[in-house]
Length: 254
Length: 315
Image (tube, rainbow over all chains, first blue to last red):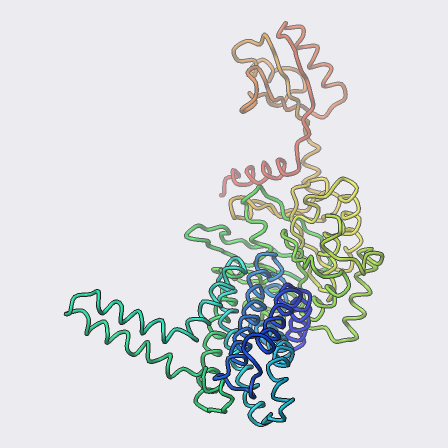
């Protein structure tokens, strides 16, 4: 517990002084402000059908990926991960500290980023607080998944930029994968011989359908959907278990 | 304090350590010697818990490192070869962070950090960024992290590597000041350092313990003979035979890999032996170009000692 708190505080300090806070967060805030006042108009509560809110949520997820990318890769590259191996610290404590720090950052950044899109709703006295609360939970879940998946990428990568690319790639695939896969299936179906097309469709249909059933949109919408919460939590847990295995392995310790 | 039994470590099908066994008693300062690739760093990393052994048993203060890693690790402080420093942090917060990792309570942390800052003479740089410190100060910060939880066993991997002469002296002094408070096992290439700091030496060779002995015994051996290197410009084809029969000469043999005409001569440590040998060689008209005393390193003595041991026929 003591070790997890130590890792949490240090990670929070690292994020606070890092490029994600100094460069990316102000940029995200500028984007949210632009979206609210010049581009996409005021949001009407936490609603992904509203372009301003949806873009802000995705910016927040990308910031979380940015913050998580160096969390393990840089420690390994600088040799500071050796401290965990030679101290009475379980790999689980390392991950708990890291994830909690990333969620704290996401909560703070989310609170900042949501101000511009929601300002209109405040002005119009159109803010539904329960919906806003559910939306916030959804955002945190989204950030938890982004953080967990990127932590796994960070544990596997030698450099944080690789981890960032992987984390962002997986996030994009999750959000837009449905469309991409459906289009790929359609394109390939027309290109391949007729005999192969049904087999290909058998492979792609479930995969493409997965995106549609995915857990992201209901939470984006600000509805508390238990299936969505369970699905996202499961995805995060799966990524963290895999990350734990990597961090506990001797190969990772070097 | 430390018992190592049959420690074996394989990396990719190669045995880096093979059946290594030794013990370190409480309060001892033991040097781990060996050439590059002998397995010194691997041994220390295994003892610190950073690596898992392929086979063997490590007991630290009565705790089995494999079966109870957390309890055993609390008793160990390790200064690795690659310093585990966060160059973006200041010295004092870094040490507080490490103290948390070692499971110290709030009061113990404050006490431990204050103590190591004083012991490692880091008070003046406590607020400075680690990245901005000199190599010597960084090494002291790394040593402080190894000591912050007041471990019973301290493992030091090449603690003076990369330091300038003054920093080496300071670090050596620091290590000496730790003896008596901690049991210390350290690896080094610096034999003067080993002679100055250690009570006992363990020599690793090809991943095995080649010898393990008290330093005094070895130093006694080193004083039994002296070695001279002669370079002759007009020597006969085999000067060693004649040299071997000269007064006070024990052994003469061609120097491996040296300039032709170079001979290594082992002589008795008696006064005037160099001058007498020079006179003999000059008298024979062999063209003496050089005659220097070669200080036989502790490692060489140690290695020879080990080889001699292997040659002793068993009855």
